[in-house]
Amino acid sequence: MHSLRLNVTDSFFPELMSLIKNYSSHITIIEETQKPDFVVGSVDEVRQRVKRAEKRGNFISHDTFWSDIENFTDSLK
Image (cartoon, rainbow, N blue to C red; front, side, top):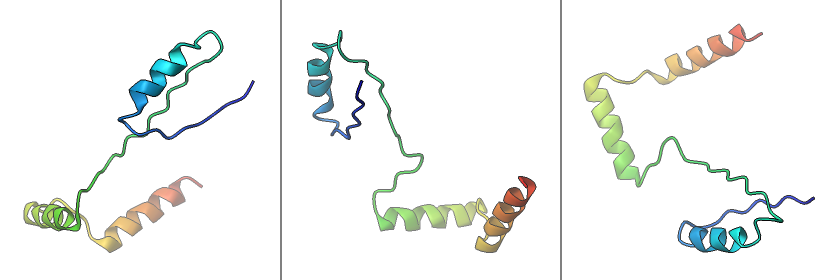
């Protein structure tokens, strides 16, 4: 048995799946999807999001972030 991993554009995906399903007796389909948790369209969008977060107070400082990460990783030891 062989495995094949493909990255396929959204526009071509339906055609590919249709073709693969014709050979379903010989193929096991394991669909792996990776959806980004955070998608940004532009640098301007990032700036706007940061400004909104700062206005709401919905952010932590760089130092606090890394301190929290360090504390968490230390707790895993």
